[in-house]
Image 1 (spheres, rainbow, N blue to C red):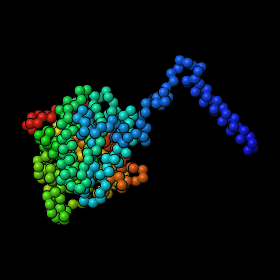
Image 2: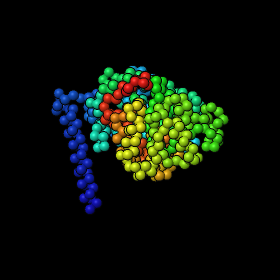
Image 3: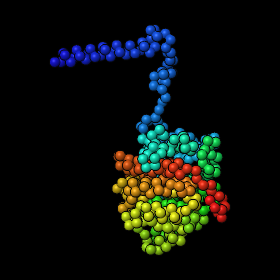
Length: 399
């Protein structure tokens, strides 16, 4: 039996060599003198074509999109930019969100521009026929040692990219591109709102998906060490308080969704309302239902220019554990995605997804996968809605 197997193997090996030799001869041997014989540096292209990216290969850009250091190259024009903001030095509990941009991009590896069509949106946001150019602008190099400097770096980068002209091929009626920011802890929204205010010359409405209010004042009862310096008053739990002080938030048209955190008492809700937010709690998804939540958000925001900020902890930590301040009892990814799909058509000027801290994720990277899928929803939302309304810099003008 052993002799028979060995003989069969030798016969198979001999035939394999003959087939390889025959292929070599037909591809470029003397029998076909007119066949082009590539130079050594052209062999790959001759045999296999373009060097395409597989889901697990290539440089790490979001969804294998074109990558550029947009802050270094003013010639890079876009309608929508993916921008990493790796900042996490203003957190009150677990750090690690500085690796969020990497984690979200890693979670997007199975997404590709050529395979971006979804049943929910019934479109591929990367399809060139939509006339919207989407690129990954990399990460902003942010100081991990000085929060004041870091916040200024974020604002400077965001303003730089927001001021860039749209491509000549753009189908957008906006005057400025839009940015999807990958955090980073939630503090990044303060410098973003400052930049939006600088460009649009008006307060911006906010749709805020989160387990937490993030409107707390920096009082000693909640943050014992926060009143020591001016900079220590700004954190991922107080940035909306600071933004409201600076007049950056449209007070009659902003709303929270998914709140379930523990509070000092009812006074926290009174303070939150004074800043200008309406409240949708986690339990409302069962008590009111998804259609009513969507109706309330759309009614609250109306036609105003709106910024959507989504903290990954709005999702239950049993499903998305990789975050710094988890709260039990959150929404499911499917519920969040259904709400997002029904917000299409609002006058969005920007998006972010924050507080992904990959070090706390499972081996299956479930949080990063969910986050990347939600970013895909953001992109699909902008494409699905068609041209956005022009945003006047005069707050009295109709949009």
